[in-house]
Length: 94
Image (cartoon, rainbow, N blue to C red; front, side, top):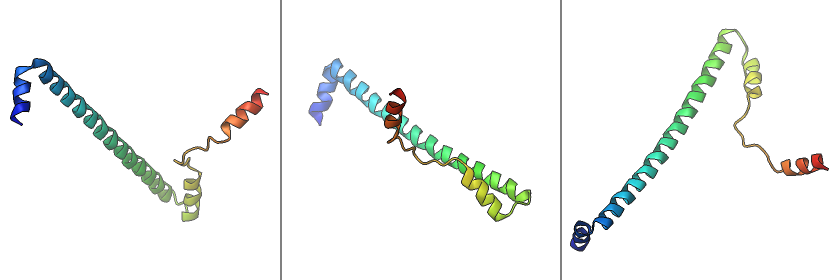
């Protein structure tokens, strides 16, 4: 351990590399944490919006079946199926 501290204090290039490496790791960690928090916040807000719409539909006097119909018509968050896309593009070109 003392050899590492001694090399850092004697060679400024090694010290600069250590500082820049530490800053890079800190930046990556900060960006990752920000991405995770913003995704979670987006999910919370989306849930709040859906719940407020459902509450408004209840206040309008809609039945549970009607609300279920409206909710099932909302766009889903499922991933799209891109498997047939290339085949359709080739057919349109031909």
